[in-house]
Length: 175
Image (cartoon, rainbow, N blue to C red; front, side, top):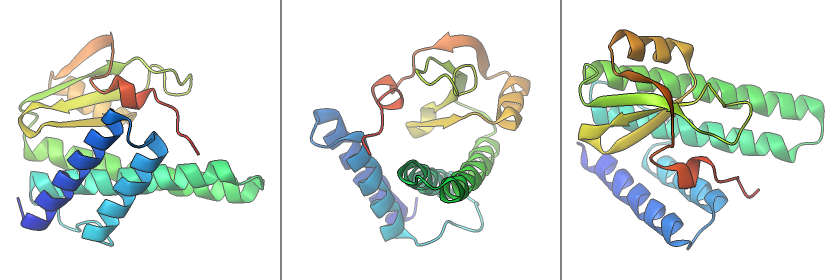
């Protein structure tokens, strides 16, 4: 793993630890993670030729999507809200492409996936968790394309489970 990417993931781990200890809120964690992503690279990797680059791109697009989504909540004007939501959806799409790239690079080995219990009515029955056991990483998606691939590769378990990171997934954003 390139040194700069290692540094980002160490910084991210430190932010997660601070969040878990209660030293920061979910909103603060998201803001600081976005800063960490952008401190490493102002844009994602164009060529995902390693798992580490793919995981970084996943984090990059996820952070950008969550930031755009949070921004959408701040707007009262319908057009501005709609535009920010569309930007968030674009980043979620790019995050899902990074997820597929990682899954293909690891050939779906060491992968466990399942739907997770969520408080959000919108995400209920749609959001699933992908545990990359060999990479100590947990990804999330609601993509039908990814879901179908996971099922095709026989790594998706039907039914609903509690997320490995339920404390985070079901924690509301504090905007």
